[in-house]
Length: 169
Image (tube, rainbow, N blue to C red):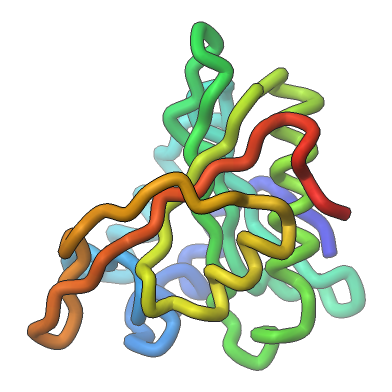
């Protein structure tokens, strides 16, 4: 697995993932966008910088783009950032790619960006993601009550954090 910058040519995969209800089950998916709009967004996206770093997750064996990982809202004054990740290609679920990408991105955040803390939120019912985050060292820090709506039901979210030095390899 490697992390790489996104290209406008990745729009088809990103658009397909965003239209897949199973992939987007526990994520805020916003409003549907056209393939052209996703392509334009990737084309006009500013280059990676301290405030936001977005990478595609690529499988080395076949160079397949399988997901995205991002550190956002990074602030040098506080040394904190938020992490988002998902694997869009379902045939790669459960094969360790998300774990590897999480560890790689967290190491990048701590070593290159000099972050002190990386945070994330996860829907309490998203057991696979919750397990992954705990496995790499994230700790539950709180619970946001009824902040995620899916299928007519409100769900809680956990807030989780990882401090520099807590990453499990």
